[in-house]
Length: 408
Image (cartoon, rainbow, N blue to C red):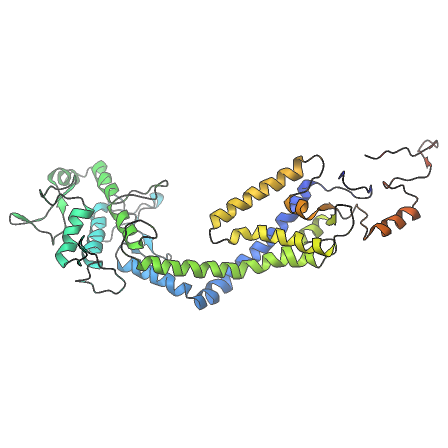
């Protein structure tokens, strides 16, 4: 029993009933919001806000770069995950290479095209692509794009023509041919020719190695990061993907707020606001009610501010930074849980302590509108000020006994 309530006719509900009643309201509001988002939101609102157009721009840009692909089953741009031997392996998530080549060869084709053709404005005058510049600010020539692939991407030594661990230049006579794709050095070419699975995997990982911790690594992964722009990797120069992704993200966020927030307001603010006992659907199902600390119906101020606080807490999920919002929500939820479960004096959560309200069992409690109404009820039923009977009680064995109940 709440020690602050001087009314024996109020019954404290189980904390689990309170939790379940909240969960019911939360799930109903969330499901309805997500349903509207998945239907009306994804079509009408995202179209109106330009989000779907931005999403198509992102996908087309990635596909045009040859670094990603899309299918009817995968309408968004998906990264390639080639098997070392080039064969499909659904268990490992590998897709087959287009022409039966090895995995590293398919990756090399894509990064070569991206760095030397796609972002080469001298050969590809695409307004979406940002041209690269030298350290002195002058634009790259067509040759610069090819040399940059060898020096900056593969890490060849420009001063000594030193190759990297796996590849060497294709030669034009005695000189490196910068306009031709690099080829494997003799050691790795021999390993590939012999069908060495281990060396094929090493070459594959050189281009792309997926990592849950870092997201990925390798030449192909770096190209994808370059394509996505500085939003995803510091120092990248391609900004079109970033600009379109920002438009899509903003449109998606606004759509989520428009679709989900109204149900949050309806279920956690409007419905309890119009009820004198602060009843939500969940509280009606589990037979709960909200009263002030004296056990009377809430004041108008309490009826407004209590559901308003709950609505604001639930809306933390809709913060622009969802991770921050969820973190704050979980912290507040944990604090409220421990308040209800382990507080000795008043088992009330955050919003109840702020608004000086409590939750009672609506079916087993006698709730009064005012002190006068309670006094009249106590007088009519011959109860003392604690809600105990004043009259002599006859026990089951027929012996009279006097009510000596003391204040708890």
